[in-house]
Length: 331
Image (cartoon, rainbow, N blue to C red; front, top):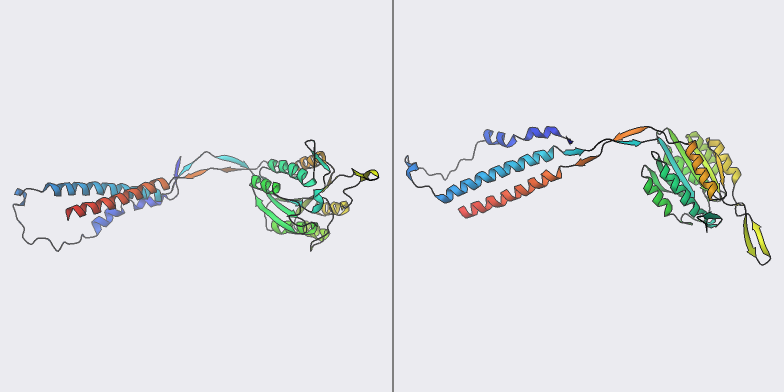
């Protein structure tokens, strides 16, 4: 159906007629002083008749242009059917570690050995796709923490920017406390019912101006719940000159601090040693923070005013050009 945003503009439709009847016409001082009572007996110039006929037509075209201008001014809009949009009322921020240790290739994805960040992107990307109704944001941190994506319902953009992230982009060290502090800052003034931070790292806090526990205490006061995920295998086999060695690539992972952060904010700590465990963690997060069924109705609108406006402008230009042409021939 068609809806008019400003229907009161229609009151201006009779404005040209009011101006015509209320304002006096300009008196032609060059009018002949001698009036002939039998003027009708003189022959009428056919050229003058044609000129008058053209003037009448131009008047009708100008009137049509004015009607179209009024129609455009009423801001016509085409209203589509209502669309139900699920909204959870939850702000969910992802904080992903981009430090140099994320380059460790101790994950298997589709039968190929990949580094930790590649596995994180793949699993987190599917998690983002499922969070319909949540406002999502993305923080990337290394030596410093950066807000890559502010809170938005545009899950596609969040996923794209996550996939475009690279190891070392934010530095080689790990600033867990700064990442939490940045999340608190971005979520502090939000009035949403639930504020969540999912923090994924494979190391310990080695950089930044804020200690992780202090940042967690601040997050708890602001009502921010933090789920922490420690990523990295417990054991990999490496070849050396002395044969094969079993090495723990996650020796630097500070599980004690990550557990304390989750406990202080009412969240949970998870350990992801491979891709399957990482997937299970994100599925469990879906269960812990289920998508609510609140629905907002949205009705798409398509503006139509530019069509009558464009036609009116074309008609007005045509009237102006033809009117000048008529007066040019008459002179």
